[in-house]
Length: 554
Image (cartoon, rainbow, N blue to C red; front, top):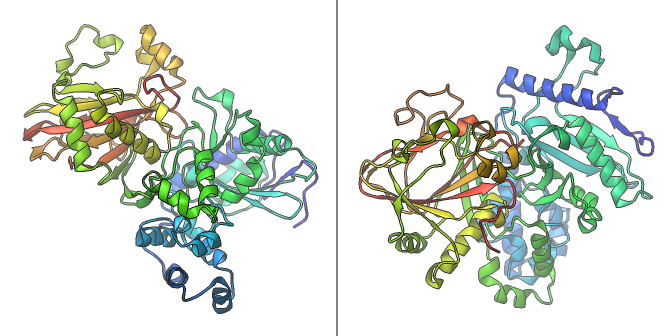
């Protein structure tokens, strides 16, 4: 490939003088094409035969290294490649399978040989190959979520940027498919995602390099701070760690940012600035390591400590409980709205602890009334009892609430300071909560000064609800999403006949998102609590915002 000119951007498609306009058109065309063709490339929840071969080799190498049967030079001699490459080229599923097999991440193994062997590659790296992409791309366009692959094109620092608009499998975008509507754009026939090459010279400062990349993303991926009421967009690793925001001015963040983006390779951009887990498809299961913090810098420091072989044993012993891997399986129950389920997130002991503290405090719940409902009784919608708990309560519960807040932050990859206090709920027989939204629609609170101040006129809002099930229920008590899968508006907000219904199960949590990745309200996140028909339902929820709030004390 011919190197682009200094500071220039070239693309596989011709870029018009109005880069922002052409970027918008390509983005719209990509969305229209995905919606028109439907499923483009469907991936099954299984390991393909080529990946199985890599997996077998990887497990053999791993066991042999840990047992001392083989050493790295022997591995290289047998496989003709460095074991780093074997791990790195292994599929996303293969890596997750090994995590489950070992019960911990390979790089934190107590074996110093295997730990040092894998340490030269960052843990947050994920290669942009077809199988790895299949764990982040959807059959449907996702508003405000984009998958971007950033790679070095040559030793001079030029970058290759591959963009999958809407985190979707992108079909061919051709003039034949688009008809006469787009003839004036003079675009080349092409297939798949948008590819561009950015010329970043060695003489450029980190700020110059970042600004070139940021300008490209602003103009061609059509992300723009001033065109949205939500927070600035941000780039995340494939594990959900925020690397940088579009408005970041921190020198310590900007200085290494290009290297970190390249090291990560497979990245996700959230236009709303807050991480949202890619749902991929209904039934999709993802392994999530809860020892990974939502704070990228903390994870980098932890990785450096783990890779310090001289102190590895000491660090492992002192941080055993804090840093040990906690693997959970996250399953996609719905894409519209996005609903994810995680079993065994809370221990039975923790569930009992929260119930014990809340029992004497619960009282009949209130609701935040919209302007047109002022003066009405809350029992028209909600008949449960509730209590708000903070980790500043008595010391016998302090660790339980604090640990669950921290664990929730690691699960959502959203900082703990974005959470509200824990709301504990108790539903007796026939008690329920009519279908409602957890977000605040600024249009419905225009004259409510307190609410408008809290949401800053719509700039910030509750992005997700993490709902904890603290007990089993003999009969009834389901959480219902009446508009799941994009169904039409409903008339009966108390009905539990239609929609996605989630059965209470002690220790399970569900995450459902009230905002789309671009920060817009998701009207399909309408949800309610079906009446308990037999038994008692104990539950709790964490409302998580897209910005730092004042509820949680550090």
